[in-house]
Amino acid sequence: MFTTYSSGPIWELVARIEVITEVKRLRDAVVHSLLAFKAKKIEQQIADNQSEIKKTESEENYEDIPLLLKKQQDLKAISKDIISSLGGL
Image (cartoon, rainbow, N blue to C red; front, side, top):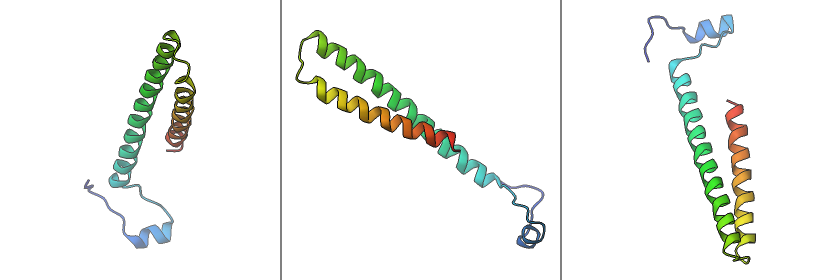
């Protein structure tokens, strides 16, 4: 967290140079890691839901399929949002 060099606010105003600190890098790394973890968990839930749909079809329990398909759509939308957030970092 500490560096041997530092810049004061005057240097940043005069030279118009933004110094990226280790704290900012750490924050970005943590946010990226959390989003990647969430994306992995959502993909796992999507796979579990797909197997549940197949199981329901094989058992010919057709009244549960619309609910599972709706859940699948919701999970896909969440996954898409998370992946787009990951690309923006």
